[in-house]
Amino acid sequence: MEFNDIYNEHRQLTGRLHRRGSRWRKGEYGLVVCVWVYDGQGKLLLTRRAPGKTYAGTWENSGGAAKAGETSLEAIVRELYEETGIQAAPEEFELLETCQDSIAFYDHYCLHRATPLSEIVLLPGETDDVQWATFEQVHAMIENKQICSIIARQFLRQEALLKAKQIAQD
Image (cartoon, rainbow, N blue to C red; front, side):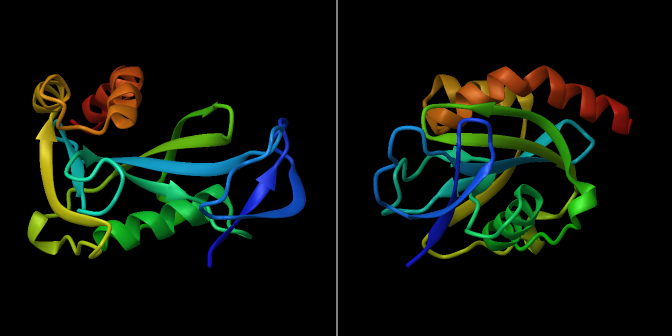
């Protein structure tokens, strides 16, 4: 059984825990982290959601819910490693933006890492494929509904920031 910290509307810890899979009460918020891994040559790392998961078979960036006791950076380091086998230190991640909806705060990061696909280690039950995709390929995948709808909206909102990171690597 997994638990998450409960935050209030000001992103302050309440000292209470939420059992993963149960409903959030009004005024309670969790913490979700996501990362765009980019190679510095115009490509983003995407993983495909495994069968049995919500949005199964669609592509996404790495991320997930912070576990109880984890900071945002600790959670993104763990999530990226669990889903891809990529190890990165907390200071290597750059915060792109933070946003909020009715049940969670979302911290969106980027990480420059040109990891060969042969070195990616997928987590059975979580991810079942991986690819590097150009921005144009991501747009085509969005049009063809191959990218998880939540991630598609996130990408479109953050695309200019991500392109600026790519250009800075040249």
